[in-house]
Image (cartoon, helix red, strand yellow):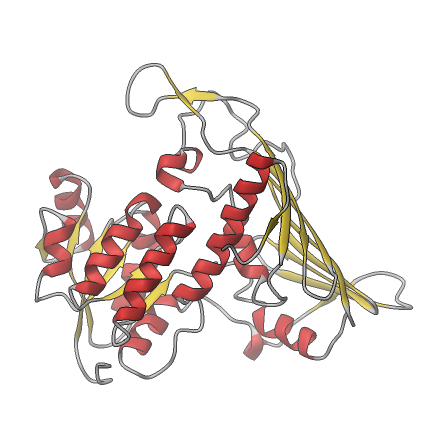
Length: 352
């Protein structure tokens, strides 16, 4: 049953990492009637530190204690992906609403398990933190697609190439450890999630990957650790109706192009460039070059994840992005990419 708009909602935080500190906690506290009531981190020391620094009144010894506490109404999961499935399922079964940090899980099996538990408890809100890319320009992009600005979609290009992992002397990052991060490579999943707001999901993928430096310094002790997530991936996709897609993702491209999405159609082109400010470039048949589409202020979107989560709990609005089914959809894509790269064969979607 949804909470009333006047009811107080007490939120517990499992994993007070950077995104939780910068976005979730301030965003929750900005909603009237919402309090951040408890926190637990990986160690008692980091839990105490987070409680003191963030002004959270109650500390928990374990995440299990937090999600079962009757003084907690909703749980924000800010841990690494390897913990998302277990905490989400336990919290939902304990009667809590859940906002789970992206990536949804490590693999499709975990994501489907999360969705199954959420489906068994339809009175509880289950939401994944959405991709922030495209939020400012989403309304304009949806309008362009409704107006058929590009005509029939023929090709798309998705790029996420930079040098975040170019320095091989740096410690192994959790995103390079498949035991923690799962099948998702670099920003592949989050950019694909953004794309799915504007175009249909692919029905086939064919991928290759490469790891150019197989070991990195161990962040937890001496010596090196094996890199188990590729730092370069290329994907070909097929969409319903025959359109084709090309994805290029890399963490080792010096002066790489960053993050972009291109849509090429029978009568026009749209390019979205992601950076400090999102830019939409458009052009149609007869135009000498692309021009920038400047959205009016009232159509520029933004981050309101926490407000949407609380609004959904109170029955004031639905979860628009990202629901658990849409999370499973992008998890299927990232796992299909991994399967194709491992086998050297195309993989059909949705996964059976």
